[in-house]
Structure formats: structure tokens, C-alpha cells
Picture 1 (cartoon, rainbow, N blue to C red):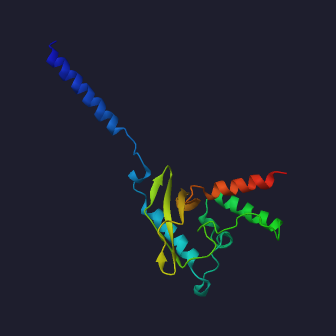
Picture 2 (picture 1 turned 30 degrees about the vertical axis):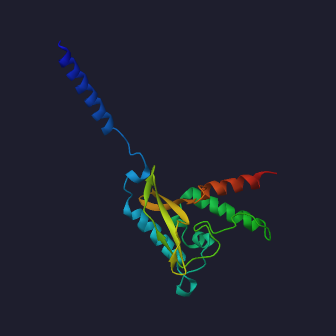
Picture 3 (picture 1 turned 180 degrees about the vertical axis):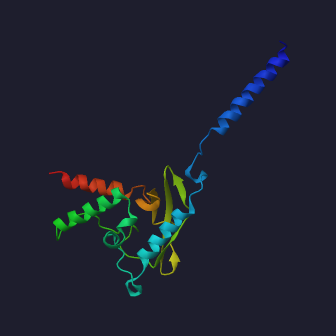
Length: 182
């Protein structure tokens, strides 16, 4: 077989392998996949309800209000961890036990409203950045990122990711472990 034909065959084989591997690649980052818009709609609805002031029929912006009025919006592991945190605080009146801040907004003072950034897919979940809007001004960076998942055909809040990279489930787990130590 002439050298030019062998070179042509080698080039064809390399091109075929390159094309085959390119077709098999997964997206490099979460932003390469488009998130289902209904995930953002769910998060927007949750934070709109959460921010509704008492004067307009809402209530305090606290996770206790979520447990009392909207627990169906929480994924089972998050719901269980928040209930345990609340129970631990109830067993130690007058002491600082459990969460010392509002976990859905990562602050202690409520804002007027919350707006959303662009949703991204991470594994089987969708992350939606949540920006606080205080005194009519949207803060520059997100306050938290809501992580949502589908359960039985509906969206639920699975976790809250904070700007320092920590997240609500991990924080609640660490606090429960610390309480369990003698």
C-alpha cells in the first residue's frame, strides 16, 4: 500500500475518533445546560410569598413561618433538619441554640423583595441565585442561591447555598453533631 494511502487512512481514522469523542462529551459546566424555567418560577413564588409584609397579609420572614405555612415547599431532608433545629432551640430556652440568622436569605433584617439571577443546572438540581432588594435597591451579589429539585413531579427547595460556599444542610448537620457531643 502506497504511503499516501496509509496517511489518508490514518487521517480518516483520527478524524473519526475525534468526531466520535466530541459527540460523546458532556457539558463542561452547569451553565452549558438550560434550566427548566419552571424552577425559577417556583423560587420566585416562594420568595414573593416570603417577602410579603405583615401589612399585606404576610408574616415574619423566618424559617419558622415556612415550617408553619409552607413546609410542602421543602425537600424531606431539609424539612427534617429545620424541624430538629427548631426543636433543639425549644429545649434550651434562653440559650443561643440552632440557627442565629434567617437561613433562606442569609441575613437578620428582612428586605422588601427578592429578585432572581439566571438558573443553572448542577447534577439533578437547579440552582437559582437570589438577590435581596432592600430600600428599592438590588444588592450587587446574590444573598443566597436556592437549590431546587423535583419530587413527585413538583419543585421543592432542597438546599440553600451561601456566598462563602457553605450550605444550609451542611450547617444544620454540623450543629446537630455538635449538640450530640457530650
